Image (tube, rainbow, N blue to C red; front, top):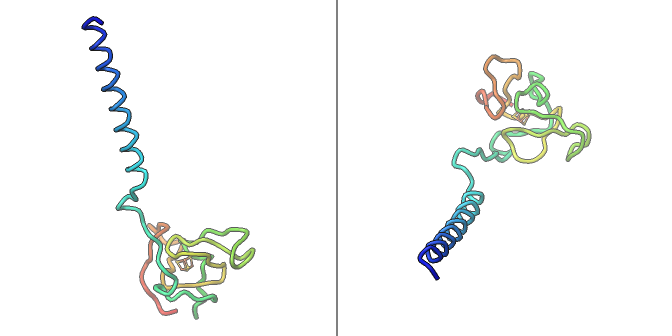
Length: 115
Ligand code: SF4
């Protein structure tokens, strides 16, 4: 075996080990939840209710609402950017944020109001 053969084996070992390290790092990174990822809140934390508030505010007027065809409330179901689980077209919570207000973005609560 020449010196070149040893250097090739060494390079192969280095590449092999390097690949193992990269794969291990990828697995670790993929399993770690980014610190900036938002966790949804429990419905009780926002006084969720299954009816509009006294002013007629309901999920369909909220920036956080996304309608969907199936779910806990059948065809009235939707997803909320703030709350865990299904919400509905006519539901309401204190995270309600007017979808027509300037600067409103999904995942924000404009402020707590009376339910
Ligand atoms: S934040 Fe409240 S009002 Fe808005 S979609 Fe979610 S549950 Fe409905």
